[in-house]
Length: 203
Image (cartoon, rainbow, N blue to C red; front, top):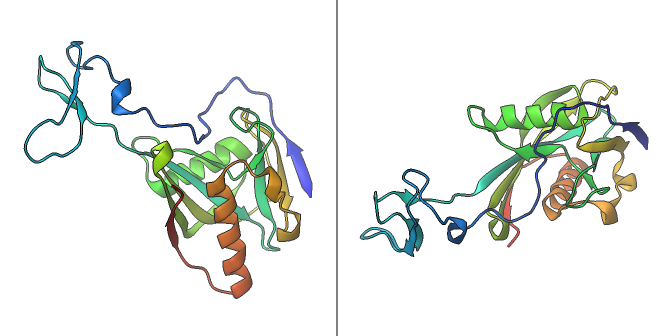
């Protein structure tokens, strides 16, 4: 397994975690007028308790976050993994992924995260997995990607990168269930000679 250590840089990015998305009960004050909010069903047509401002009427919605990433693979089948430099799961292995930003597509976000975390050169491929993680308030989306070089320049949130064949994947050291399940589906499809799109839940 080939490993490459990270570069030194003052830049700090947001690598995804499976910490919980803030809930509506975390909202105390209206973001528009600053008044204390009330936790209640807003009115007809809604059936969920939300943070509602009694002063200006603003309803504060809390929606899932999108995590986007890639399964970067060489032509010989080895997959690029990143060793996390931050908590949670510092020192564990993951795929390059992170939170989607405004003004970018799913594929653009996945490409950006791969460059930021691994310093990898890739060609984006098709969608591979779409995983709902309701307990964390997140949806994780991974694309297949072809590595066009074995030269890497890991960012500050990655301790090292490595190329690993299926037999060398450190399954017990994979940081998150979404990454582990994405890798499993990738190798299952590759061994079968046909790739699909896999949508499933991790409650």
